[in-house]
Image (tube, rainbow, N blue to C red; front, side):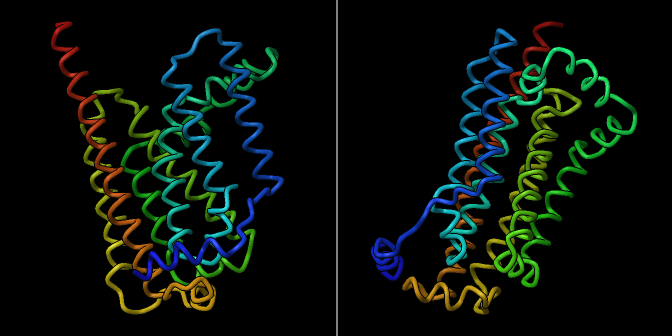
Length: 275
């Protein structure tokens, strides 16, 4: 009943879209580069294009829509924003294979130098290290848990720079995580191990969500006065945030894990037929 009251009460508050110039510019540039690259390549799988723009739309909703402003006053909205970045936008963008398309968007004279630069030993070694599945899982887990420490989390609500740093770390580590699992060095045969890593990540993120849900102590007191003004008890808001991380996010992890498992079985069957 309190949640229904909150939804009705929210309609009386004016929520603005967040047209941060840098965010909007980066979104516009990324979309333009992808489109130009796809056109110059002359071919692209429809699924890759649909996935990329699905991820792009998820980023737009998370960072530009009123959800961004609502996250300043409601922990549950902030949690929804973060989950949208990490388990919706990130995997879809990775499935879109944007790097190849964006390379083709560059002037012809730039492509070979850029390709050669990223294949130099230091850059290639760094990329291989951070896209090793286990490393990617650990790095993403560290980002998730560290940013939910009360002192750091509340700092994001006081500083736009720290807030941007938090979002960047979530997007980047999530993208590395999904890239390592989907485009890993072992190809589709690596999807079997990827299922385990998805399960592991869903377990530790779900555990964090469960802790938030069952806790009777307010983790982030900074939300207290902000949430009360919206007609929702701060503890209820925290419980709702925990449930979002625990249940809906867990379902998405389950769906993605099942998809990887099916792809792994299909690849194994294909290789058996070839033999």
